[in-house]
Length: 176
Image 1 (cartoon, helix red, strand yellow):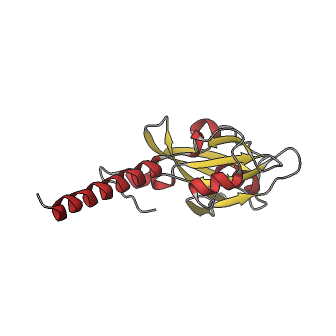
Image 2 (cartoon, one colour):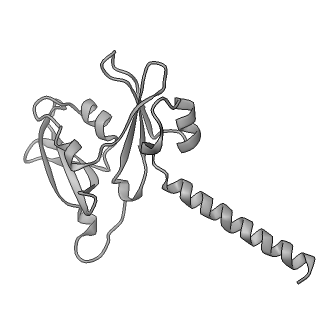
Image 3 (cartoon, rainbow, N blue to C red):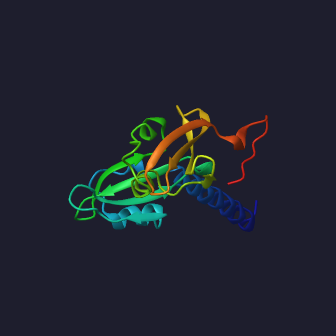
């Protein structure tokens, strides 16, 4: 083997290592961040958030939204204290989190802050409701869809879940 061949092989190995490092970093999720991590460090690691929700008084912290993962099934919410340090990280698109939605109380602002932007918005004219559709992985296994339905004043009137229609019929209709 000549010097040129070994350096070429070294370049291939370095390229493979770089690709593997990138893939592993892509698998990283915010729940691995330690409490107290600065907002700047969160952004350095995960990039700019999809949305930022300002603090609403002393009762609710500043919140960063990161939609990470396939098919818009995961929304990681990172809560920051007044010094912009990590308080809590939660993946909110879960059956349990959707169970906390308060019919007749929560509004579009509350739902957006909790679950992020919906995958799709649909009107149900016969019911005079607007549904925000959120894909999620029920029990970590089933491709499901939660519909949070609002009346004309923006108050939650009902929720319904079922299978994600993009995965029905024996084929994956994975259009986002």
